[in-house]
Image (cartoon, rainbow, N blue to C red; front, side, top):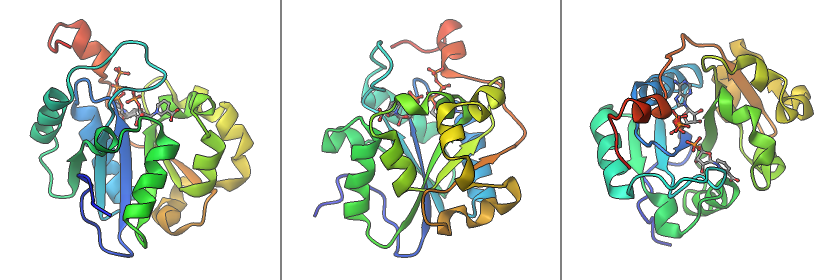
Length: 201
Ligand SMILES: Nc1ncnc2c1ncn2[C@@H]1O[C@H](COP(=O)(O)OP(=O)(O)OP(=O)(O)O)[C@@H](O)[C@H]1O
Ligand SMILES: O=C(O)c1ccc[n+]([C@@H]2O[C@H](COP(=O)([O-])O)[C@@H](O)[C@H]2O)c1
């Protein structure tokens, strides 16, 4: 089966998947990727540049523009950028994960997201399947810690939450397993950058 732009990973490696609109990418993405590499004991983080978030009504900037900006800012040997979702024709994370698992057997994946996404995770297609099929690492984000902790997904899977001190074993933990890590927070968002007129769609 062709890789379709999926980075290489050896069997047994621990890979964090950071899905995002990256419209535009910013230092918050770099910061949480580095924090995830360290705290979740990962070998790589792959940025999955989304063709378009199914819950966002406005289309993002062109894929080529976002990919180029991601590659420029993610200048780190263990962060890889891919347009895999556009190549396989999916924008739903559950489908993306199935496609990745089929192409990279024996690799240990962790789904990464900021706290704002945990707060609305129960609106994602097949969200319970996601929780039950991949460990999930959640990274603190300014303003979203409480709503994330009180969210439907957090409550439903509270019994499967690893403490922050156990973050290093998340990738090796059979799902459901998730972990919220408190890291120094970087208050930047793509919305702010677009509002300042520094990025055109
Ligand atoms: N500053 C940040 N701190 C923590 N997580 C972040 C931060 N910025 C982005 N993320 C996380 O990175 C992932 C991709 O984010 P995305 O590309 O949507 O950026 P964004 O800044 O949230 O964009 P927008 O403002 O357009 O919604 C999401 O899981 C999001 O929660
Ligand atoms: O699968 C879904 O239903 C779903 C709903 C909302 C968001 N997502 C994914 O969540 C990731 C973060 O999206 P965003 O726009 O907040 O960067 C990105 O990979 C999206 O495809 C996925």
